[in-house]
Length: 99
Length: 334
Image 1: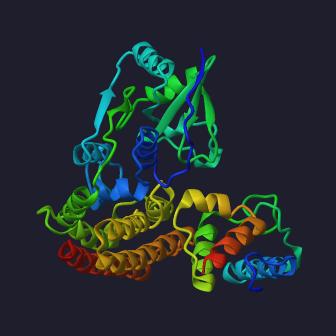
Image 2: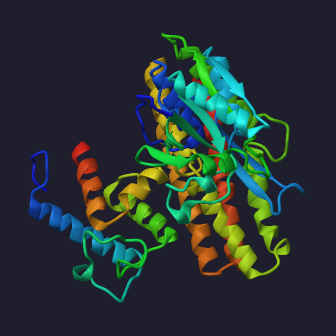
């Protein structure tokens, strides 16, 4: 990560890739790789090959806390953030900047 | 009729505290949602078994309406409240308020809030929203669970306000009529904390407060004898996650919201110990969240043998032990 206030494009891409791998690893997804996940596609429902459900959402929230130390406390906020890999990246970028 | 009040819409963690906070902010009082929750001693636990419920359940906050009443009392805020048997009178009152430029909170059945995602919409009679205008036959709504200002057709709104069943809304509406300009939060914060400690530690009822958490831990082991089959048990076990995380709790059964309140209380009372208590409550919240996940997972996988339920029971008991020590220590800080 750079020392400037915002992440470079490469750093964001790295973070997105890291998030995809985290999701795949934590949810023990075997039918798809990180490269095949579209950063903009909805994580929940049929439009994304990952197709997560609400229980997976809690696991992702716990994994983000464990790996990055960020707490997604409120479920209304969580619904806005766990939309896609890109929305999670955006959230983490802001949170990590606070540290 | 075409009137929209200039009202700042904000999302909130919980509908009752979110609507009340927004109305107080609109009326000039600077207060946050966690502060409303904490001053009103919203934090709670109760394990409930009753012939009124199809299955035992638990609550993690004070009863609906209590937060509003406690805030009114402790901050000396006068609220005007109305219930209407007759929908026409109830609608006329709401329209009159809109015409006068007064936003009001109303109680509705959440199921009818058609602007929310369909998968979220369930029949819950104690959802609160703010009405901030009307355009022709559509009410303009500030719903703290929705990211934007929304609209709802008048006929649908009537169904939502006069839905039947348990805790029916009965056309309830309220709005502040007298909000003090300057409020010293110190005493209300202390009262809220003391009352929360009392509720969690000292109410002599075996299913309320910490005793309620222990009761829940014990009784969950008996749930297999109360269900029709594994599907039913799975459904009830997965509901633990819904009650802790998915019903506007701010996460971990309101424990995160209470932790934020304690952090703000530390600033108001200039009491560093409350900062430490806030951190402790956050950690307790993290562990409640692990219970949510554990319950959701064993429920989903139908992995509901005696061993797993004993494990779940132990996790709940541990939260009881931690909260017991927590509230004992919290009582000493104010």
